[in-house]
Structures are given as C-alpha cells and as structure tokens.
Amino acid sequence: MQLPDDQIRAGHIPADLYRQIPPGTDLRRIVIVQEAPRSYKGPIVLTLVVLTGSIALLLVIAFVAQVVAGAAVAVLSATGGLSYTINRTTKRKNLLSK
Image (cartoon, rainbow, N blue to C red; front, top):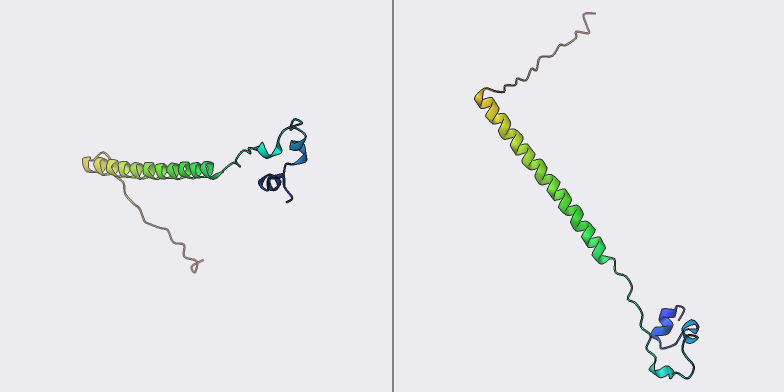
C-alpha cells in the first residue's frame, strides 16, 4: 500500500484525511467518496470521427469537382466552344554530327 488510493480501498484513512475528521466521530461510519479518474476514450473517439469525416468530405468534394470539370469540358468541346490539341513534336539534337 504505497498510494493513498490503495489505503482508502483497504479501509485505512490517510493521515491528512484523519486530521480533518471531527473528534468523537465513529470511524466505522465514515464513507470516503473519491472522484472517478478521467476517461480519455470519449475525446479520442470524437477526434477520430471528426478527422475521418473531414477526410471523407474532402474526397467527395474532389470527386464532384472532377465530374463537374469533365462534364464541362465534354459539353464545351461538343458545342465547339472549346478545343484542345496535344502536340507531341519534339526536337531531337543530333550529337554525332557536331
């Protein structure tokens, strides 16, 4: 029994609490109430849920933006309002002729 919590669980009254008890009190009728230790499970789960929801929301926004952009390019190219070409010509240097 090293800690005050262990002493209280075993039925012993620590000295600092014993000094606060009024004289003439029946020690068998004393009940010591302790506050429960804080649980960190709730805040951790809440943080994970918020992060997961934020990531899912960003993925949905990115997917919708991609679909909208693809549809806009398809509509504009079909109506003639937009055209694009890919030029793949390259200039090769001939190193042997120098």
